[in-house]
Length: 448
Image (tube, rainbow, N blue to C red; front, top):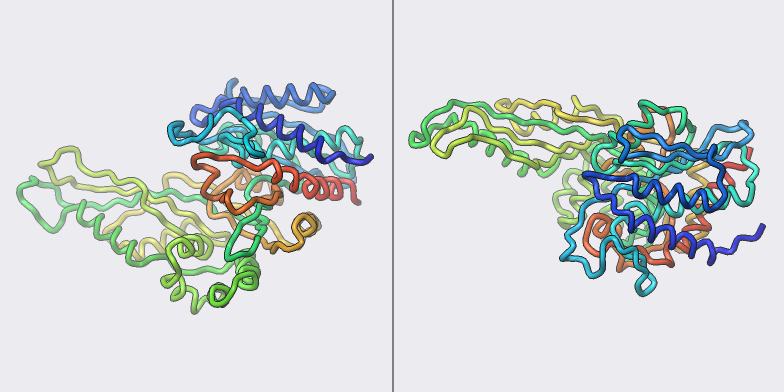
């Protein structure tokens, strides 16, 4: 059956507008608003009620999981998207952040990029498979879930811990890959194969308490300040090269003009990377430090209760992100070596990362479909410094990738706009990505 991509794009845009209008800022979430929209879309498309299930840890924070059955000869593929979004500063928006309006060929609103727009495309492909009665070798599973932006508790973690049978799959696809990243005049298409683990730490300095009028050199606040200054001067922790980042650096070096391409290529040499990182421009340095090291950022300071009392302790909260192949203990040893012996490190929260191989049929299909979408683009694996639902799904052994294809123009910078003001996605981006996503899903699920 021939596919009318213009009609499918129009349908996807209308569904996205409805999802944006279902305000689901997390906290508190109230994801039920968006889940009801998806349920209504499935019902209107004639999808039987036994195809989808709604489950919830809290009634107002449900997840919807739908499954098209295959013949069972191959294990399932999961398409997962979250419906919660981050908060907005309304006074800084040009248009209503929850209006879902189409203005000058762009869909405006919180979640347009992260990630209701991507979920709307997943939903479109799922419905296309249903309408075309695609002969499936493997089940095709669609998950619309809560709570990705604040810790996974009511979404992917809940499904993995309490309803694993609903999302059982061999492979999974979610956000953070497939959209255009512009750099040095080149169009780059990262496909996420890994993401760093999260490890939040308390870094505490102890000292001698006393009266504020009597200064001394055992002040816990000063000890903490000195330790944080050592962390700043260090610039970064030791370099560790991982397979996806090595492959990413190779592609980046080929895509960039001299001398940028040459410098990026030299980052693949661990003996040179540490020196080069210090010499990169600030924005590039931040990116490559996140990709090449166990990163650490102080985020909260706590000390004292009265101005005239020197406290006995001072504490900083550290956001540490750990590379695949590294452990929390590895990162803590590196941080301790920089901050010094007066600092006590304690893990307060952690989550596993994710890592999937690059030599799978699914990855090859994603690369081929993206190249077909933009023949002049550069396709590369990548590692996400942050965290997505992939970290939870990977606990089941699922091979998770970030892939939501589409051609973004330079004036829509994904990394700055996804949680920023005036978030929006061009209709043309959706139009360009749907055939690529369909190619991947239809071929992967119907091939033996």
